[in-house]
Length: 93
Image 1: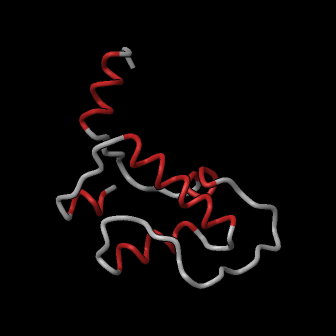
Image 2: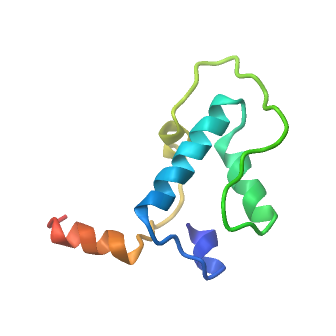
């Protein structure tokens, strides 16, 4: 999200986030690490996430959810889009 903000292309909808998470999950199931997908997009200056063309490495360990892959990392202070802040304030959260 920070990268998108830096290139003046902030994520504007919840659907964008959901689709990105789904894509990362499918890539992980095909042997690719979500971090690799994100890093490749940033390195190439892309605005979106794209599945790699080459086959991924097979996993020998128990598969983890996409959420687990992100849970143990420190991403700094979260930056919520305006629509998310408005939704949370309406709900009293």
